[in-house]
Image 1: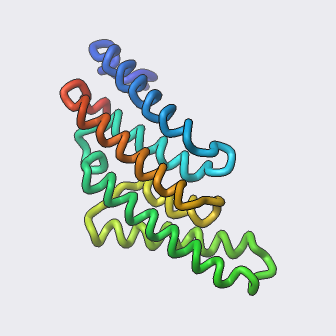
Image 2 (image 1 turned 180 degrees about the vertical axis):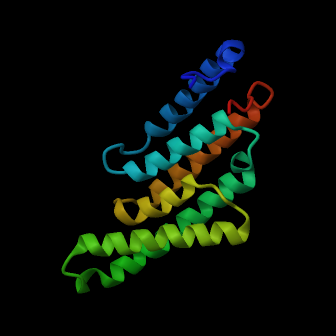
Length: 165
């Protein structure tokens, strides 16, 4: 069993460079989001940064998947957030309410991504985050901006980025 990737020896600078780029991209996003109150949203964007900077040639890194997946995830999350608010006064245990509608948001986002061919797994985390975290429409703007930052960084640096997997 090997502990390190066999390609590391020949591609160390690429591993370091692409990891550094992901760090800078996430830093620029985290400067605008409340890291203590929006953990699920931030985790989703970090997972997207991982995909974009370690597998830039994968389907999940393409514009259709990135932007489309997040639009589906955001739409599913907003819908389920408002559905949860409709039932807010009827549930004695609010934790169960958030679990139920959070799960529904994830399942709905998966279904919609599959049928629209916009699969981007981290975007389902946004759907969950919008149900379980406090957010505003400014949060949505920052999420979309964050995804655009990641996409344009990948596009701008495409000649330098390689699949590290």
